[in-house]
Length: 207
Image (cartoon, rainbow, N blue to C red):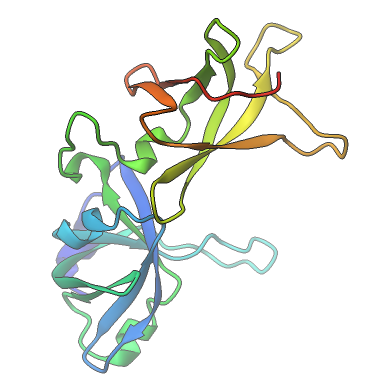
């Protein structure tokens, strides 16, 4: 790959948006499987940062630092994205990138409308419900899923810590964290405050 990629400073706001799943064609294109339905960021980005899979310390595998590749072309291919990257000219070079995580700096995401959100920004938000009459924190957004019609929040249920510290996960009879799925639709999501990392809803939950 070009020396400029090796010399590029790694941004501190990289967001992983997908992984290289395979080579595509014989001219060095790669196929990327996005982590969510919001793949437009990958398609619009002028460069991607690729990182090898996490190291296997038991085997002494060393992970390389993220490296930038300029995106020459990118287009949808079913649920995936196929792209031509600068410096990757044949299938063998593309195949060598299989398994790499693909990231884009958060600061380069296109602006959203007032009522639109990137899924990555919702993950980690505290989730509140006023189903019992008063807003109460019931958990934290662990992931965002897609059912084809709308997004679904996967919320890990929490309870106040006995020591007064951070909330603790609620566990089921087998000691596993309890979860609930919440449709991310206007009927149930009352407010999203990203600066405060808070989502308010009227979704019922057993507390």
